[in-house]
Length: 192
Ligand SMILES: [Zn+2]
Ligand SMILES: [Zn+2]
Image 1 (cartoon, rainbow, N blue to C red):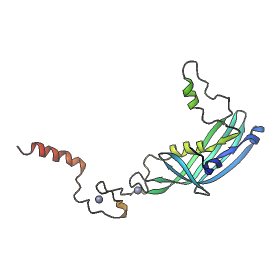
Image 2: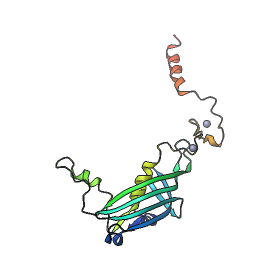
Image 3: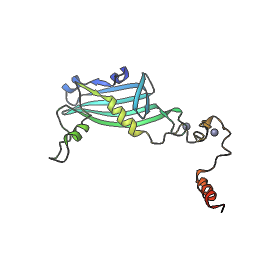
Image 4: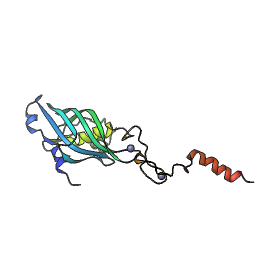
């Protein structure tokens, strides 16, 4: 998978910061982003998603504490149309210096593979990768049900038309799916 220039913008060099413990540096990044099944995908700079955070140098790593605000594009779960979902997510993550294990497994309790999986927030080649922080926090901060509007009417189950754009005309001969059970029973046992 090739890396976009926007993803590179979120790789912040921290070598200087690390030289002085407890020194801080503020970072503000605006990006245009979309969130979906594939996670958060960036499509432009100066977008409506804002990450503002303090990066603090600690003896064993870098703490990143701040907020993700603004909007991110998502698809409505009912009508599938894209809309801008408002975000206000506090973030607080810790990027460890490589070689310092945060979770030292008790002998025999965790296998190596499981430890490695937990090893994502690590300073890599003198940079912290904030893509990870944005992706994790936005994806867990978004609700499962994302509605373009609380009153979104969704799609017609018969013809697929977006009912927010007007009626399709097939609503009349639709049968409530709960009633179909009774119709089947009637057909089977009703005429003897
Ligand atoms: Zn909708
Ligand atoms: Zn229809």
